[in-house]
Length: 159
Image (tube, rainbow, N blue to C red; front, side):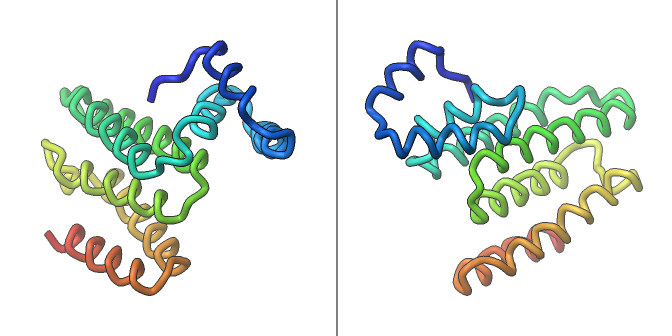
């Protein structure tokens, strides 16, 4: 996800009401170095959640393809970094559906990765923790979404 320039952010802020600005600033105060990325999300992508999810998924796929596969040490290090960045993007959104969708995509990317992560205990433990987290988050969604995401999670873990 590319951050907008300060000038673009400034222009967009001119079109916001004082109440909206206050809400944005209060939310911004919770974050430190990611302030510019968060503000970019709030101003330009929050209203287009599906396109935001798609852009984060594309970024994840790109990162998975760049992993150095020389040893499991580098693989583990890269996978942890991808997960850390994914959680940062999830934190920006604050939408449970987005969180479940991105974590499912992370697990999908990890399971389809070659060499197989099933040969490494650390990566399998990481995958299992994410599966448990996804199950927990699915419980807080609407019933229809719960069913859809549960089926998707089960297919992912069984396949």
